[in-house]
Image (cartoon, rainbow, N blue to C red; front, top):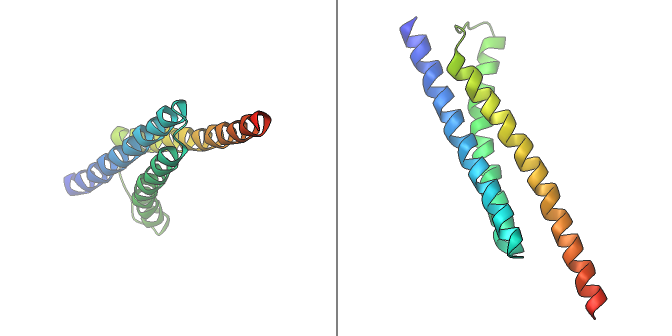
Amino acid sequence: MNEELDELTAVAFQIILKAGDAKVAAEDALKALHQSNFALAQACLQKADASLLQAHNAQTDLVQREAAGEKFAYSVIFNHAQDTLMTSMTQLSLTKEICALYERLDRRIDALQT
């Protein structure tokens, strides 16, 4: 049982770390937008996407294993990891929409000024 919890905890911390990296990258994208640095914002979004993919893959592996019949004990840390992942995914989704809006508004302002 300890080995099972150790594995689950290790995966949970991997998810938390990568989801946290994605959250920071999404926040950096917003900061870049405030400076109208759209290239940097896009680079930050790509970094966030890559981090979220790693976190999601780690979670998906465990979910698929459990669906195949492997049992895991309940873990508050894993529950927290899933919550962190979902929150980061939502934040990234909203940040992408905000980026698109900023870029659209910037193009409209440029068009008005010419």
